[in-house]
Length: 83
Image (cartoon, rainbow, N blue to C red; front, top):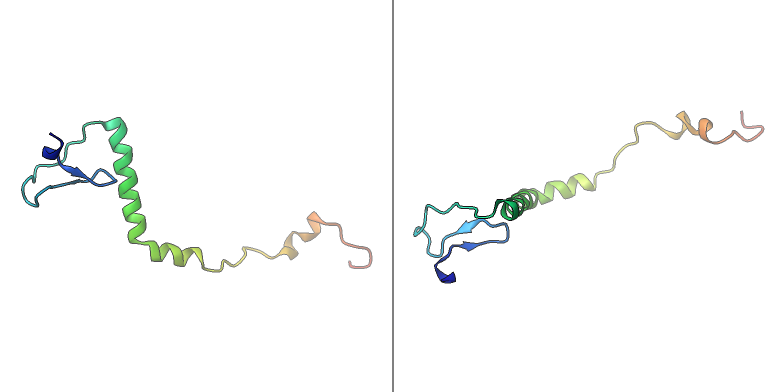
């Protein structure tokens, strides 16, 4: 019986056992369980498709918005003689 059912990938994307034999695939029998898995799979596929871009963005040096000279005196008292 299980051999008659469509194949599913990890993100529950339906695939045909024989390409072209079941173009009507698309049922999601358990919305509570299967929709989150499908959303995870789609999100993962989109993220991995742009992985190089995400890695580049994560490794870019970020310039500070402002230097410590703007707030240092408000946090630490100025030592005597350094006014």
